[in-house]
Amino acid sequence: MADTLPEVPDRLDQLLSRAAAAHPARPAVVTDDFTMDYATFDARVTAVAAGLQALAPEPSVVAVGTVLHPDVAVAYYAAVRAGHTVAVVNPLLREDDLLHVLGLGGARVVLLDPALNARLEKVRDRLPALRDVVLIGAGTDGLDLLATDAPLTAHGKGPQDTAALQFTSGTTGRPKAVRLSHRNVTVNAAQIAQAHRLDGHTVSLNHLPTYHPMHLNSAIAAGATQVLCASPEPYAALMTANRHRATILYSLPVRLARLAADPDLDSVSMTSVKRIASGGSGLPVPAARRLSKRFGVPVFQGYGLAETSPLTHSDDPDRPVHGSVGTPVAGTECRVVHLDSRAVLAPGGVGEVQLRGPQVMQGYAGGPDGTGLEPGGWLNTGDVGRIDEDGRLFLVDRLKDVFKCDNFLVAPSDVERVLRQDERVADVVVVELADAEHGAVAGALVVLASGHTDALADVVARANDALPYYQHVADAMTLDAIPRSGNGKIQRWVLAAQLTSRLPVAG
Image 1: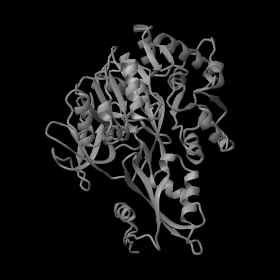
Image 2: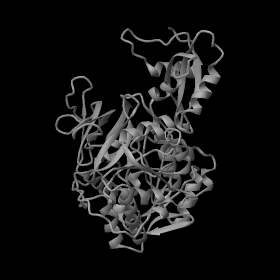
Image 3: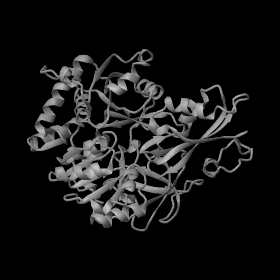
Image 4: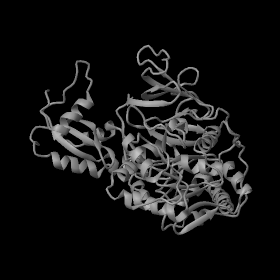
């Protein structure tokens, strides 16, 4: 990848105003029944930003949460243009986690869809900082009501000011709020556009469950057109791509793997897509090869974290090496260090991946700049990998216990916490189970309290009712005791194998 950093404006919302000035009539965001060109997009963002300034005159945190919908793009940029910090909230969160992230971020205004608002209403009285809720998304007119012709008040935010909060699960399982500056986000948008070879002729098909800022910002940085496909079905994405003449298709590894395994794959075609990009977790090599052979286009993937805005690596979009996440994007450094000594390893050595670059976060909310970073600005990723002689990164394993279901991060401790709220549960361990459809799902090994030996099914059902679908316990078994080492450690991979095979577990 190129070493030269692309030129970027001082503020995130200026990515949009720059694109609108250069090609006002070009479609920016498209669905099957909606098209918004860049000039309309930019004007609508300004009108909604003025409305947000009226709601919250002082710089505040504005949270945005809804499923894949054009309103997200407007709300995201309007919050920033108003001088606020935008916090992107997963719209599938249930009450407890919603309370946590909104409280952690200190959200003053929330723009969200009706389904998420129904859950928010149950905990809103425990969010004293929250003053205003605006409904956005399908079937709502919240942005229309919020928009105003009033002039915007200048706010003076610059490259080093915080533009966004991105929530992520850490090693403890509770989400942290990552503080990203305007420069973090604008540089990464341009890095992605450069690495993925996006330009004004690009039509990208977004086939994700939610609207991730990575895809929104990089398309705008390139002046590209983005088509949204909300259906989870892989064939729907292919048909949408054909209808809109998409040139690149962005999807999840689990969806692409399911498509590759479909016996009817040979009956469908893509007429305009030149590349398929997979992100969020690892795409199995056989699936990448199958899709590449069937459609005659490269299938490539990348790597990144919420703490890195998010992308740090991308494989070559035209000549990918399957199994690798590629080389660092422009201006980004990557090294692998020994797990114990922390010495930097030579190519081929396996250790923890560390990253440094202009897209690496300011820090975590609640701490000064640099919180969560090593001296010198290096970020410990918690991932184990190796770098080959050509600088390509290959991920080997994870240090953390978290896993991904449908690209949503699942922390076993989050699921365990809900299960432990049931008085019938004496002890529990949640593990990752491989799943062909979702990538991975949660499994539970449960020690039931005395007198409740037949309660497992009801315990799991009650917990699943309190969790978003991607945290649901898909399989469970009871134990007399959870086996632990002398220092209290649990080998989750051993327990996962025993749950899958239903072997007896030694206490």
